Amino acid sequence: MLEAAIAEKRISENPARGVKIPRTSSLAVDEDEIPTLEEVELLAQHISPQYRLTIYLQAGAGLRISETLAFASECRRTDFIRVRWQVSSQASRGDRRTTFVPLKHRAEGEYRDIPIAPFMDEEIDAHLERWEPIPVIFKDKAGKDRQLDVFFAPRERGKGIMPTATTYGYHFKKACKGAGLVDANGKPKYTPHALRHFFASTALANGIPIHEVSRWLGHKSIKTTVDIYGHLVPGAWHRCREVMQDAMRPVPVAVPSDAPQAPGEYEEVA
Image 1 (spheres, rainbow, N blue to C red):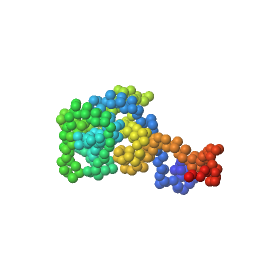
Image 2: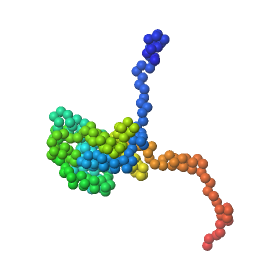
Image 3: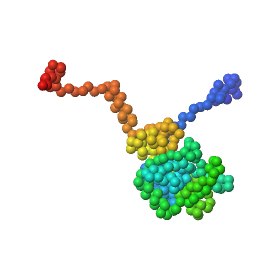
Image 4: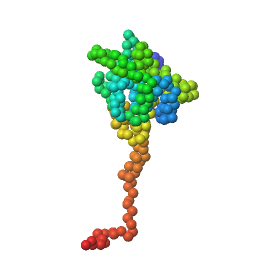
């Protein structure tokens, strides 16, 4: 509009040129983006069997899909998992060698620990009964050879390339459609990241402190977690109303009619 005004010589220059409009989109996750427990189980039932565990690593431990696909034997500890690698988005490019990179917001060698429930151990055991981990050699940033015994490498004894978020997306979409989790246009209702939302929202809804959830999710700062999930913390709205009411309009304490009214009315105790 202003440029048109210049062309019509109504104004000499555009006063808004160079001004950046601030982003108005919110990071807050919409409740409709979070699958129910029943839907999570449906996805686990309908995804390719070798990827069943990925559903629970995301929904039950909050891993990113790139971290999930890099899950290896070294990750499993007693009552928790330790992740330190993720599959690179470039794992299928170049010489087609498998590539692992450090976690998001972490330097090489740093890791993240996440507690896991007993059912997670059962799912891991069930996976290992059918598919043994496959050793994959890769080079770290220093050019040193490293090995990970990964759970989700190509099944032909490590031949081919590692699955990436893109290739995994095919299996996830297929699972959504098989489970009937589609919108009015027949498109999948959820993305893999929705399972991470399930983990975070479930933890917060059951009273887990948001700073702990933030650490397990691997967010750069707790602000990110608050921006995305803060509105899901249960009871905050109601608690605020109660606190402010009690602070600013305190209810007088009722005193029984027969209670002593002055110090002299108390009986002397021997």
